[in-house]
Length: 198
Image (cartoon, rainbow, N blue to C red; front, side, top):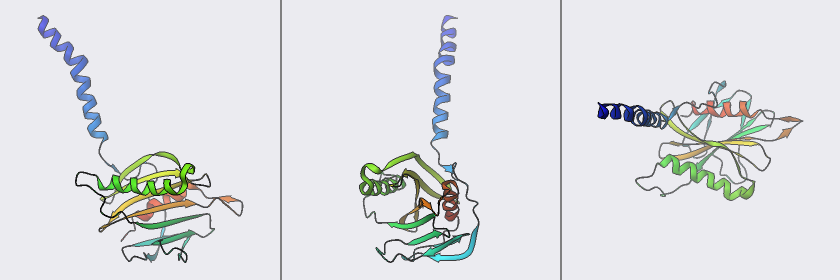
C-alpha cells in the first residue's frame, strides 16, 4: 500500500506538473499565425509599385504615394504618407552565404538586419519589445521594434521572397506641421502590405 501511495504522490506532485509544463512549452514554440500586435486590414489601392530589383511588387496604401531614391539607389520601394509624417522602405538584405545548415535562416536574417541598425545608431539604438515571429498567408516573418535617433518607434519586418531576404521598415517622421504620426496605424499599414506582396 505504501508503494502505491508513493507512486500516486509522485505522479501528483512531480510527473503531472512536468507533463503539463512540457505540453505548454511545445504549444508555445509554434509560430503565431498573423501578428498578435497589429492587424492587416488597412485599405490598399489598386495601384502597384515595382521594386527596383524587380523581385516583387506591392500595392500602394490609401493616403500614400511612392517616391524614388535619388541618393543611394539602395531602396527597393519607398512609400511616403501623403502628409509626410511617415514612410515605409523596402530593402534587399545582402546577407550573402552566412548560413550554416543547422541555423534557422529567418532568425539569422533578422539578427543580421538588427546588427546593421545597431552599427549605424550605436548607443541611440534602443529595443522597444521582444522579437515577433509569425506567419501570414503561409509565409514566415520576423519583426523587431526599436527607437531611432528621433526617439520614435520603428518597426522592421524581415521576410524571404524567392531566394532573397528583405526588410520592410515602417518609420515615423516626427512632427510634421505640428502632427506626429500614429505609429499603431503606421504598423497596421506595414502589416497590410505583406498581404499584397507578389
